[in-house]
Image (cartoon, rainbow, N blue to C red):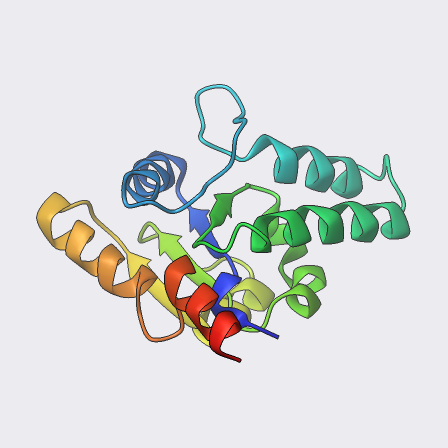
Length: 162
């Protein structure tokens, strides 16, 4: 399984997460097609997660919907990510779907949830506590395009030569 298309998941304080999502989009990371008004939250992930958290769909319905959405995103063969406030409640159920997700924690309020803290700190992560545009863009570029992210051209070349 190719880990290069695991997501970049943005969590934390909303003002900063909105800015981070906007910068990721400008850097070429796919962050969704539809967004919840004024928040840059991916509407597809958010609707499924919200329905599950509020118990409007079953565990099986949630898993089938999330699997389909993740397969669609991975099949784009490019870096992708999302922001959804419900991810903090669903971090553990999401883990089987990813090999090495990347987390960007925004804000200096700390981790209020120990499960969230465990997953983020034991994964490839970046903690951003303030917005210094020049430094931030450099940090994000290094984080996004680190060793396990390849371009679609590199991937296609590997598949063609195999």
